[in-house]
Length: 505
Ligand code: ZN
Image 1: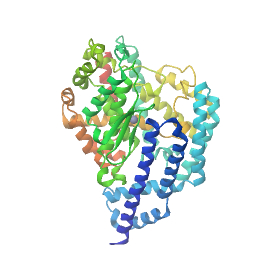
Image 2: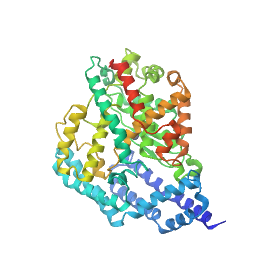
Image 3: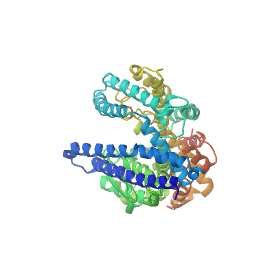
Image 4: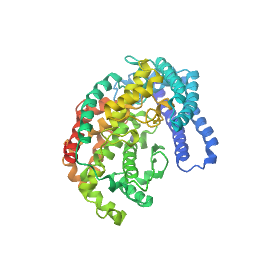
């Protein structure tokens, strides 16, 4: 066997062990957010940081750099889309990023993260941005240093976008997002002016948690979640956690006075889980080609099931009778049309995580624009609340009454996650693009949903997206699956259709 092949085999072995270690960390984190008693918090923090340290040490070991160099000099990587070609490209990407940032900066970033999050939580409680401002300034400064260490070709933002959305550029996103903004502002204004109002009262009746859970489990199973390879539990903030081959866990929370949270939340997390369950981890665990390509693609899978499937009329043609069976008297008078309208309540609101599928994107555009401006210095951190309000007014026609409901609402920036927000809207854009193409390829999706058949759509996603892992970049994947580049049109078409059908505008 030649040296390059030996190096590749060693790299794969090492990478599988590192992935096992990381999956232990993931399981610890899942437990922390679901079942761990409060008393375990301190030891859990020690356990988690110990695992994280072990993962980091092994992933940045010089021997990985030597193996990579030996493989890259050989013809093993001739085909960039072969297993080896794709794996080595992605190993190189993560190895370079991890080794280019000096240990002192990594430490400073993680120390600042802990303190900044504490300051943020306190500032949010008191709705006082000034208490968080020094920490945000420091975070922005450290992230700029990080960007300089890893390097970038175009905008400094690209260096921070890269770990979440590899190969994407802020210039490309700016172009697509700008094409989205005007039509979206216009659409939301038209909807706000419509005399038709959704009967949201239907969602605000008393829905007992145990029954919500029963229906949520049925929903997850019906669209394809494998409960032999996953779980559903309760946590304060819903998430999907991949614990390695054969084990993907999702969580939700139940609000007895509101139907929407848990059910659509579970469809959302199930979408993430279906992606994880569809990656070829059984044989290729630990290799990049068995991992999700980007956060935007991940989010496209959750949004597709939550919004494009879960908020469609045909889905409820199948599901409303089942919901009525579960909730009995509470839902007896609910009609399909009224329910479909109620779950598609589109209206401007202050809080991103509560926003509907249309207004949500304007919340993201605002954050995307402001974080770029803070990085370049065009916006001083102290001026953030004002800039936030100004944009909220311009995009959604409302102004937050205080900082807690404005620029202090999200945890992201306090945790150093600058460059993360656009992946949410990317998810919405990709989801619509995939869904439109799946409809063309599979025909009459609505007729299938109405009969409770979701297998063909899942099969399409498995074939076009899931099984490829990181073989293709997100941009290539979209091009291959849909024949076109990232575009705002399918999402706008979808929302316009909905607005016309439900709101008559
Ligand atoms: Zn998500």
